[in-house]
Image 1 (tube, protein in one colour):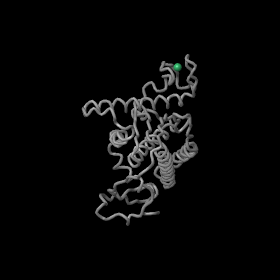
Image 2 (cartoon, protein in one colour):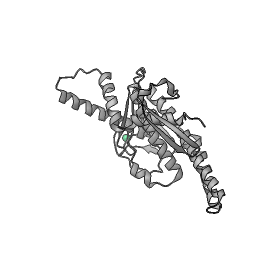
Image 3 (cartoon, protein in one colour):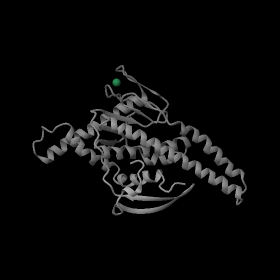
Image 4 (cartoon, helix red, strand yellow):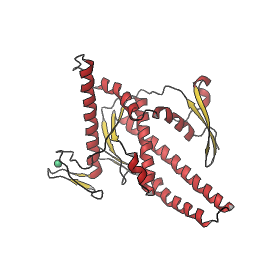
Length: 284
Ligand SMILES: [Zn+2]
């Protein structure tokens, strides 16, 4: 992934060519069939990610990845540009122009978001062997009409696709778990601590006090590891090879590709297209 000249690919590997119209012009997409793998050293690190509104994500080490500033800026600008459409008279040229400006603004933001998601996902999958995150519910997200959140939601979905893409590329594991109770459970003692969305701190009777999203990220990582262990013991049971002496890393890597394709089966096909387009082979 990244910037490549289309000439380096044999013509046979170009599977599909599409012409796409965007707000700022026409683009040609080349869908190229290439094996996209890279040997990356195992780090022995594992991470859980909680996607939140306050931060882009919070990880199970307590690190908060801030929301990119362009999202906040974008929200204001988009509202402004959108208002200007309605100030112009219907059917007049001014309105057409205003609408174009609005579409271009959206396009710019989506490109910035793509670059941001790619960069962060690449970093996460390079520095960790396992990454667990929430299986976000698209239904809930569509229902939400708040602009900032909807921009964020799209960002997460894309971020997640890139996590899966890089996991596959680097031979690592990206895994989604159901988000149930991840924000309520105590990561120390497992007790349920009910809290509303506005409660930002997890405080448990056992003495555990953590920032809410940090606690959730720890739970997410734990759930992911449980899922992997369950799958591993199941596969050992069915293979019947008495494989209690499976080395720790091999099976996980082997399954890694499997579980990441399981989560987003057609993503590996889609993403290269996405990335090629984002760099615009037909430059403006
Ligand atoms: Zn506790």
